[in-house]
Length: 325
Image (cartoon, rainbow, N blue to C red; front, side, top):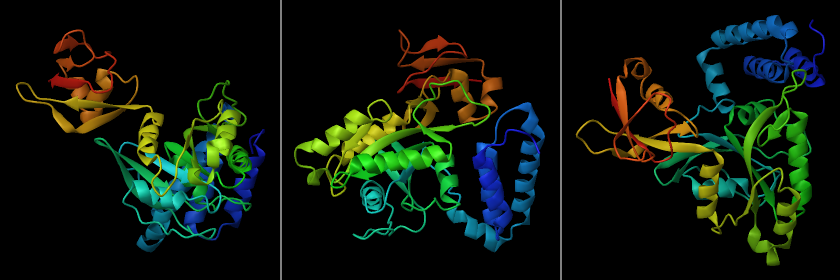
């Protein structure tokens, strides 16, 4: 066995050996991959784990594959955002309010027992939100960590009518213990203990129960360097602003296409990471476009509408591109 395997890896390995179902085994193998040190000494082990995952996946029958559907929700829309938080903070009510999903909403803890996806509409973009079981005193379910790791970003929901500072600290601690960081990695990557960093937004719910906003301001001040925050009320307070903040948190942009002589299609944008180039947009449209493209014109970010640009031209949100192949 390679040296310098982390305690998180060894714990995941023990859970893998104790797992009784195929989907649990796959989940713990994926956890082992996620927390494994990244150096040449683990290359062989990494390949071995991937082979085990592939073989177990092939061995799953239709019933087992269906059972695993609650542990792996396929991405839809511009991005996938996992909504996490302690019990009874109003996660499910928020998801229900800004999507068409119907998670169970009740006034008692631990209502949500499975993951429920829903689509949030913001202008002409759809973002997938996943309502998840609460993170409490007990370790997260074996499949919940996989959903969190696969998500493009996280919403951390806390309750302003309770000790929101303690709730936030507990959430950050749980994620840190599982090698999940928040925001951008400002430190050199630690090969011995790799951390998966997630874009995140702190959602302080039940603002109507925080007279004067004292709890929210204390929360925002303490975590200003770690997490951007927004105060909302799930029954309807500031939810439009929440949608906007979720979209901007994702750090993506919308690019539109047009054919020569026609008007651009402004209904279904191509979603790209900010800083993407024309070539990246061509690949997103169709893999063959990048190699076949002779030239392109761009409206929006150029000094002149319809200016010809090169493959490495960096696009901006709202640009319209016309590809010639």
